[in-house]
Length: 170
Image (cartoon, rainbow, N blue to C red; front, side, top):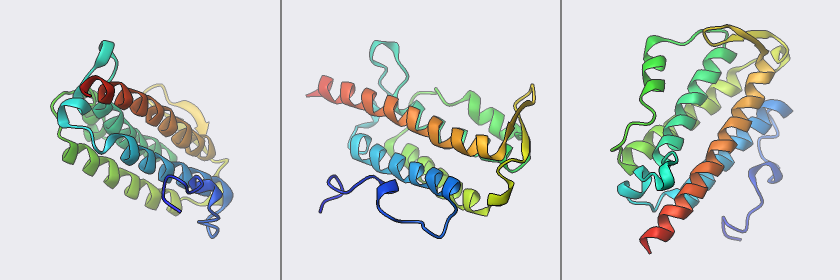
């Protein structure tokens, strides 16, 4: 069975030692990595930074997934964002990144995120958290669900953009 024929991570019976909610988020991150590699890894630097019809480039989505994962998990850990995280947020749309840089940051962020998710106390999913400058209310569990949802949303956008730029080159 090839990777393309394999069921999605959540259907593989893996990570059974991890409680249900964190397991679902970890499976979402695994799927994100597989989909981004499958659809975006062969794009050129030019294609990764292309903005067909003015939409966000694949490069943005790779950076945004990595950096938003870090930000959301910072909130889940009960912390506020650092100056470095805020500066990184402002640079997500910058052009000119290479495939090597983008996929390195993306892979490191997913690996780090998985470690951080595993370190969260599953008994604390209902613990309140505050998000952003306005300190909007949520919970650890709410943040984890949003990690999965937000990641998959940007993977979908990146894959769609990747298909457009790949067709334009052929």
